[in-house]
Image (cartoon, rainbow, N blue to C red; front, side, top):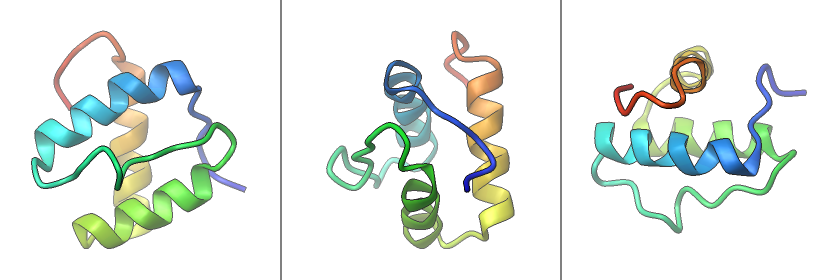
Length: 71
């Protein structure tokens, strides 16, 4: 079970933040279905070459200030 839960609505904002931080990430690479957080985390880990702890931290940070455009 994933350490976080992301709604489809929130994911649109989080995805924009990730794409700003990692401008090489595409919409296709960041496809997400609600409830598939583990698969998303694993995919992001591979795409940005970071460990799980870092990716989860980054996603949580993006969710805390969802209305802020910064990550």
